[in-house]
Image 1 (tube, helix red, strand yellow):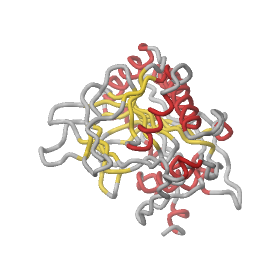
Image 2 (cartoon, helix red, strand yellow):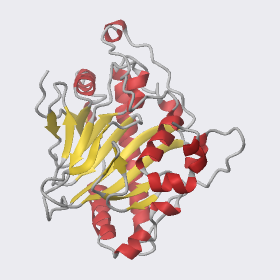
Image 3 (tube, one colour):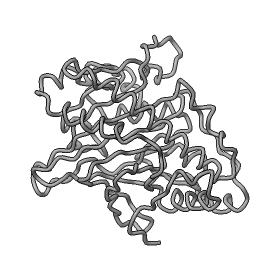
Amino acid sequence: MSVSSLPVLDLSRFRTDPTFLADLRVAARDVGFFYVTGHGVPAEVTAGIDELARRFFALPVEQRLEIENVHSPQFRGYTRTGTEHTGGTADWREQIDIGPERAVVEQRPGDPDWVRLIGPNQWPSALPELRDTVLRWQDEALRVSREVLRALAAALGQAEGYFDAWFDEESSLHVKIVRYPGRPDPESDQGVGVHKDYGYLALLQQDEVGGLQVEGPDGRWIDATPVPGSFVVNIGEMLEIATQGYLTATRHRVVSPPVGVDRFSVPFFLGPRLDAVVEPLELPAELAARVRGISDDPDNPLHAQFGENAVRGWLRSHPRVAEKYWPDVLARRP
């Protein structure tokens, strides 16, 4: 099947239009990526985080490095260009990683490795207003993502609240504020390498530059051309496991903008509690007959334990932080 563009879904149709669930099911299964409009996020919230992202990345590098992620065992804070890796290759972007605001939990003997991921964020002293702006945007992104997840549950023949138990105040949320500088040379275009997202859903606010590409069902790359007022939503690996491959996490990448052009984006990753273990849901017979099975990729094995998936992803993506704070874990992992 060939797909040339991503579907656009108006989320306000969820409880008013009986055809919405069928449209969502097709978009989520056949492409795994779609635009969401009608989400109700105030324009001042999306504009506010875009403005402060640009202000942060315009700060002198010394002020950005004040919150560099090598100061955080939880992988929070600023990452300079070329220090995060996807597929073993450095990505051409700089960013801030932000998670839930929580106190550090002391790891006791026998505790799982993911306990170390719980902790505080780092915020720049030169831009104190960033904290409130990001946390307000995060609240809105969580609301929209939870609504999409409820709609997906209904589209899969489940009660709307099927997934709710894992998304309480201990949910593992993750925000990135990202700047993609123009490519260093015309032949180098890896903004972010090819990958899948390991949570349940990802939601993306992108500017007008573009660069996100999604692998279509026929293997061709689809440009996620920016649609004003929308978010891009995609299926994560946890939903692939939960649906036994009826839904599949889709490979995607970001191509660096041209020389001299910057791209700004804010992705939000909806993860459950770190102690969540994904159990296959019982699909209606007509959907169960179309289950494809979970992806079998030796370079990217999927785990039903969300915390294990999260640890694996962070250790692989940020080797400097892993080597500084997680050497014992690295020593006992292949």
